[in-house]
Image 1 (cartoon, rainbow, N blue to C red):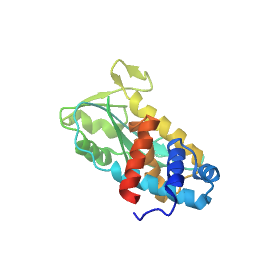
Image 2: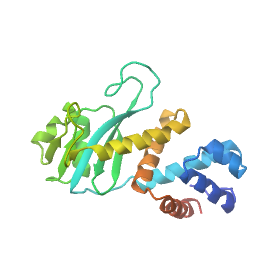
Image 3: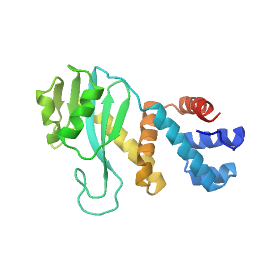
Amino acid sequence: MRKSRLSKYKQDRLIEYFVSGSTARTAAELVNVNKSTAAYYFHRLREIIALETQNRGVLSGEFEVDESYFGGTRKGKRGRGAAGKVPVFGILKRGGKVYTQIIPDASGKTMIPIIEDRIMPDSIVYSDCWRGYDVLDVSEFKHYRINHSKIFADQKNHINGIENFWNQAKRHMRKFNGIPAKHFELFLKECEWRFNNSDSKSQLKQLKQWVKHYMG
């Protein structure tokens, strides 16, 4: 990434507004830069975040897995298979971090390779009763299901953590009144980063370090 032409002062201000969750339009007004300049700078910040969050090793422990659907403007069917929406698969390590990936569909054939790539055998995996997870019952994982039509949590058997992430991500994305499909993954990785690093001061420090490395 080439060096930004913005002064360090304006870059720091934009980073602060990005961390606070402001839109590029609002940040542009407050920092006194062109709105397209702020939008492009925010885009570059999301590219850096995506680069820094892409490679993670295989983990063991207790995990929650779930899929969710983002975007779309067509009315009608909701949830799995909803028209015009982007399906996303998520893995949350309890006491650790969330990992997300855009998927073509919510079939077991699609999701199991992702699970196997991220979670060590003999780990505990919690899911809901979606049939896409049936294959986990005969896998190398210890699989527990929660039936949401009857109960949302049964002691340790729940997926409340990953569902909390979905809610947080959707709430953040709603600020932007529609995200271009080609940039959706960058916004998704931004939400993942925010969830995994929830302290604003930590986010600010980390982002400034990354900007110095990539654009300094």
